[in-house]
Image (cartoon, rainbow over all chains, first blue to last red; front, top):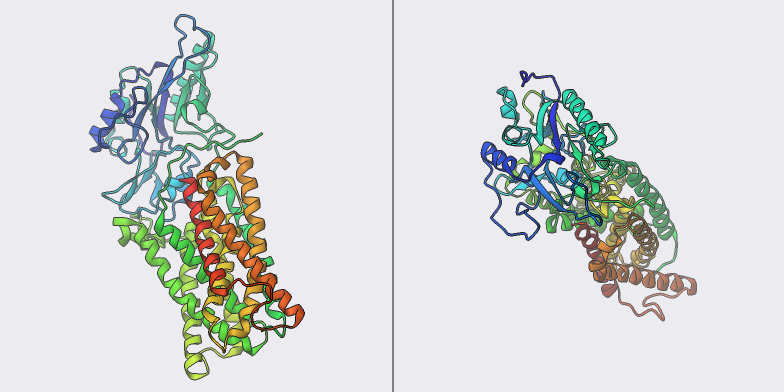
Length: 266
Length: 303
């Protein structure tokens, strides 16, 4: 791929239609980022024993068993959806919005990055991230998530997960190029009759657009992604919350004054 | 109909945060009540006002301790809330749109008001005169009470300004925590002054004020359930109904006690209210348990 340059926006285009669930992305991510991983567990959830994204899992291959009522046509099966999930590096990032320490920043590659030396483990970002991406590392007491292999980008290397993906389900590159590739891919699928294929996060309907966006084979909720209606920023509740508090305060002060103004009480 | 869908991880805000919310509500509520008592214009309310300012001090001191403890091994980086240490971009942190950011600064400012007012009250009790002349004390208390109202309410707004189920599905938590904090503080003060002859003049008035706060609290609890129900996350509250029952029992106790004192006033009676045998101790403890239970139900139901 072309040289990686600071000042340009980079991201992932994850095409779930070609994901085979091999988890090479999970392994490559852990290896490069020296993540210990969680204790081995058997979740009895399809082929998934990772569970969710967290401080030790910055890539997570989801397995969604989705058997349709009617049989599928040849080459059009969708009984088993697979998707390599990751931080979306949102343009309007909820985590960044609420972070009180300034630990969450945008890098020169326009990705969202948590500075470990600045983060103090307040977990406000965990409460805010609508994708459940961020986890707490108990050893460091800080929040962790995908860095989009910031150190590799600085060295001119593509992220480990994209490098390892054998089917090019995970594609890395300049965002504009990825968006063009996604448009071509979804148009091709539609022309083949795969009408359920849709792009998620390609446009600005979800958090102003996602640097890590997806081609999905079903509606977003099936994959555990909020739809455009539910993709809301935490600050939406600032005004309503403070307004209710202000009205309550006025009524409470009036009540207090009325109670304490009364005379002759024993 | 619009139903909220959440795919978030819980932030694991548990016991430290629960007790921070509890003590912050009581400290702020006590400061507001102290200010209101001082504005009654009756010098017989001054002992109760003094106790209110004194009690708000230890309740405030424990707040940063709890918040720091909640950070775990990163406790020593608590000051990063106020100072951005990003290399090349250092400076003070203040995000008006982030309740946690504003709240930290408000807690610092509130700490100043509480410390001065408590010291003033302590000196006043010992020497008969505080450090601040009464003409300045009232405006000082008003400013402190404004910050106190913020402290009592922003914790609820902080929860709402997230993407967590329940918390982000309602806009009433700020008001609800404020009303509950005031009610709890009134109950705490009633508990503290019941055997103080010099302050007992304010006892009935505190119960009355608690009654007004409880009416507000009850109304906001109802709105809370309506808004959460409309968002489709009401089922999360079911396991926590026993806590909600305690919270509502506290509200009911306040209302019964306040009604008794209103009746007593109407009949010109004094002492124990005829027909209302709920003891101040029992009611106050029930109210305080309710304040804690309400916060626990809200905090844990989302996680």
